[in-house]
Length: 330
Image (cartoon, rainbow, N blue to C red; front, side):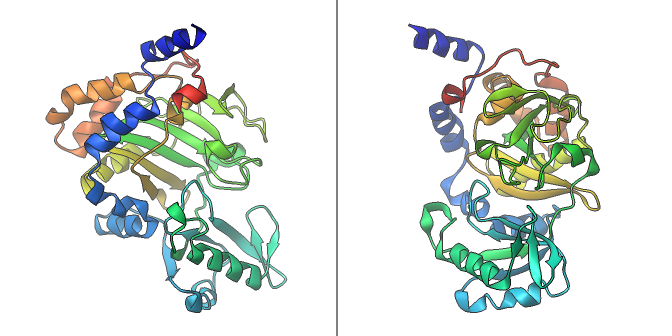
């Protein structure tokens, strides 16, 4: 009986579950033929550049073990860079290098890394250790983001990002994902990162969550989390809305970063974004998605879809109206 009451409460709160997400939204709005352009980060980067959407600069790619020696040329005059698997997921396999120390590389966490260890990491990427399904992969090297100073006290050892869930081209819900010491500098909630819901209308953060528990302060710095104004907020929403037009995917997670020199940059796209964004925001998705369904045909361009998100979708209050049980909500 307790389980039935809890399920009824979640339905009444408009919480979207995994099965409904997959059947009613992912399968219904994401054509299988369009998925390769978002499942591969290199393909996403190329697609974005073709359509004038800014991304972190690409230094080079490595497709075979015999090409690993190219890395020295890619980073010869650089102090910082990021190594990524093209088809990785959940932040696995990403290596952030922030400088050089006495002939060694310095990782984001301050540990040293020699050239042999870096080559071994690249070899692991190519073998498919971090790719979906363990398939052989490619590695690529790109610029290290220097994130906006508004996040200085809210981040430990990594780069915070902004996830916007876009449905039929309309930004439906958003959150900031903050790295922590526990998450090893990765902005992933399942690794111990912090998620902050964002009020779409104002771009201010609300309702911090870590390990599915409400938090008001960053677990490492103690900095307050609520009420932070995300810079370039409408620019981020416009970029997210445009990703629908360039991919044709109707249910899409858009991950972006705010670089202090270059502004908003697209990091990656996800055709099956997780549902923890509901926990971070303290509200269910169903109401926003249903409202978008009623008006989507009228919204012909990204500007109209962003205006709809700003004016017509639910507002977040300073305190979350519900707290969701993660095992049922995610």
